[in-house]
Length: 479
Image (cartoon, rainbow, N blue to C red):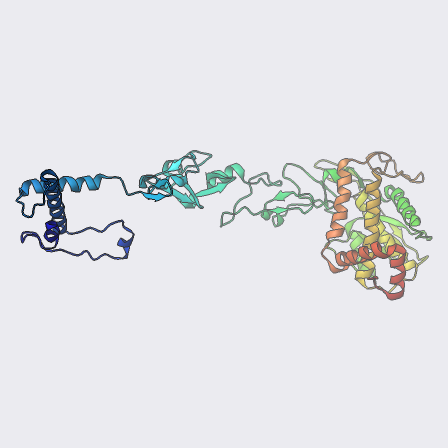
C-alpha cells in the first residue's frame, strides 16, 4: 500500500524523528512521549490509508494514485488521535473476566489509611503519623481537653487514646498513698514510685529519704492524714497493729505459755523455766552489747536469747496513750537475772502485735532449746535458719487455726484491748500474720533468709526430727 511508503518517506515538510532517551524512572510508565513531528507523520499516514481504503470500497477497484485535500487529512487525523486518547485503559482478559490494570482511581489509593480519631479513611491532604498510627490533621487533638496537639513531643497515647502529656498526667497518674499528691514524673516523663512488696502501698521515692516514719511492725509508711502512735523509745506503731499489740511483760505471759505448749506438741519440751521480759529498744541494745555469743544481722533486733547474767530494765505496766497518740506513764523496773541453766532470759521488744511477738518468741525459744540440748557451735546460717523455720511453723499454725488461743488463767493481765483474749481474729490480724510469714520467706540475708530456705526444704523432705538429728551429727542441714 502506498501509505506505508509515506510513513517512511513522508513529504519534506515533515520534521525528522526525535528519540526520547528515558531514565529508569520512566520504565514504569505505560508509554513514552514521542516528538511532535513523529505524531504528525503517523497521523498523516493513517489518515491517507483510511482514505485509500474507503475509495477502494466505494469504486470496487484499486487506486494507485490519489489526490487528497491536506486540510481534510489533518482534520481526520486529529479526530482519530483524540479518540485514541479518550478511550478507557486497555483491559486484560483472564479467562472470561476482564480486569482493569487499576481497580480504583489513583485518587482513592490512600483510602486504606484509617484515622484513629474519626475512624474514617484518609485521602489526599495533610495527615499526622504518630507512633505508627494516622490521624487527620483536624483529628489530632487531646482526648481530655479536646485541644489540638501541635507537636509530637507534647503527645502521648494512653489506653489507646491520644492526650497531651500534661493532661494525661493530671487525669491518670498514680496518687501517692503517703502525701496524697500525684506521683511526679522524672526527667524522661516516666512515673517512678515505690511499692511495699506485701501491702502494695505506693508512694513517692522521696519519702524514703525525707524522714517519713514506718510502722515498726508492718513496715507501712505513715500517711500524712493519719497519725501513728509514738512509743516511748521513738518507734512508730500504726493504729491497726496497735489493736493487737502486747505492751508489757505480764500481758505476754499467756502467749509465752501457748508457745511452750506448741513446742511440747512437737516433742521438744523446754523443761527449764526461762524468764520472758518485754523491754524497750535501749534496754535490748544494751543487753546485746553485754552478750558475748549473740549474733544479729538485722536492721533492728527485736528479740534476744540471753546466756549471760545481767540486770535488765523491763516494762511492767501497760502505758497510757496521751494527746497526739504519744505513750505516757510507761513503768519500767529492774530485773536481776540468775543463772540456773545455759539460758538466763528471753527479751522481746514491747509494743508489737501479738502474732509478731509470738513469732519472735518462737524463734528465740528455739535458740534456747538448742543451747539446753547441747547445740553450741552451729554456724549462723544453720542456727538462725532452723529458728526461722520454727517461727514460720508457729505462724502457720496460728493462721490455720483462725482464732486466738485462750489466755492462761495464771496471767494477771486485765487489758481488754489485747487480742490474746478469746475470740475470732480480725481480718487485718490474719493478713498481718501472712505479712510476717512473707518477710521470713523473702528475707535476702544469708543467715536468716538463705538459712530459712535451706532448713525449710530439709524439714519438708526429712521431717523436723530428722533434720534436727542430722544437725546434731553434722552441724549442717541434710540435702
